Image (cartoon, rainbow, N blue to C red; front, side):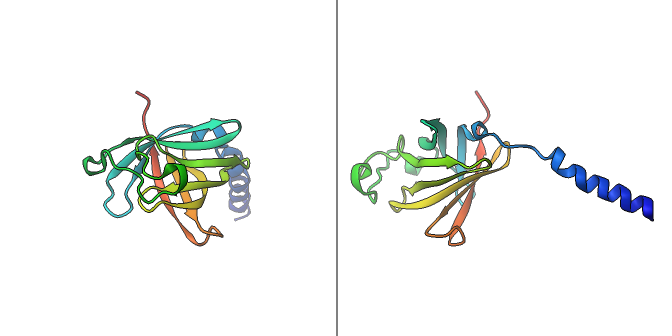
Length: 148
């Protein structure tokens, strides 16, 4: 029994050593958003870092019915701009594990939310949008697009 406890403790102590560290550059690239309700691929978003902050731009709308849509509900300079090409993630900062303290825009309703991006694994991105505190929000899962 003592031997089993020692082996179990050794394995538990070794777990953090085997944990994969996340680099801020792991978030960059092309990601595909998926509709929460229909599970359909909706858009491709290019995520990039500029001047130390993270941004995301819709590079392509994937559903035929979304082609050519404008952000009619947006405010300010984004009002009535084409959704394709629109920057929807702005100003996130790296905290050592995730990108936080920025904004994400929902082009469907024109509303901006606080945003945090975390990686579930190298090809799965959790995009959390919320109002006020993170508990009051929802998380979408985006998938990394294979390099062409």
